[in-house]
Image (tube, rainbow, N blue to C red; front, side, top):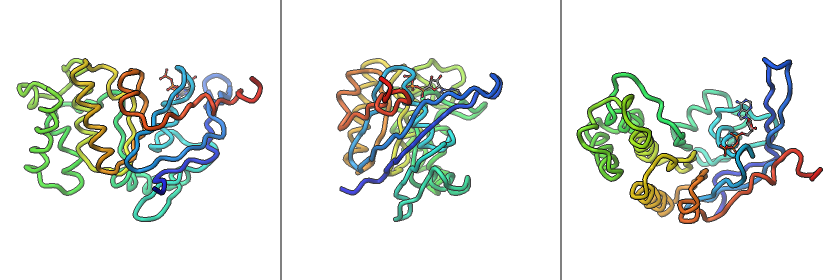
Length: 235
Ligand SMILES: Nc1ncnc2c1ncn2[C@@H]1O[C@H](COP(=O)(O)OP(=O)(O)OP(=O)(O)O)[C@@H](O)[C@H]1O
């Protein structure tokens, strides 16, 4: 199957402006590809640059060098050099992202937070709410919490709202930043099942999973980020 996302020569250096402009190279010459129906996992120790790669792929971090080619509207588009408006369009239609923490919006209920991405994409409010209820119930979020804003929810409850929101759409590429970090075993198993369903639907997934059981259950390939370390040639 042809890749839906191809990364070439990707590099990231952080410039510490408040520290006299010190440069911190983190990733050099990263290259990998993602295929539909497969889950790739970013591996490597803490600080290796796994989150930085996900953030570059979602357009949250600027890219210093290289290309991120993504299949969007039938053609390969370079996300690394795309204009902000184009990046937003790609996020709306092609690439989804489940961040580690929920961005809590005051006064908006958990149900509406989950349904919102579908409503924004033109699904009618009732159908979107039905799908949101289905996901929240699958993720065992107690029904009494659905009408409440998640600001006061526990870490695991907030993470389940975040997962439901990230999985409700049908983006062909889905990035997952430690989606199971605060979950118990039952809910980790639900997320594994949801990832398997995305694969069966042809979605290309790229994730960071610190939990070895989850990683082993979902990974089709492991991309070892230590291979993209700036000092690897000196080692
Ligand atoms: N916004 C930033 N500004 C400066 N340095 C950063 C920034 N984000 C990440 N870094 C640095 O880049 C390196 C890689 O961080 P990153 O979070 O990508 O690693 P990681 O592999 O995801 O780590 P972990 O497994 O601990 O989450 C670290 O040394 C970190 O300090």
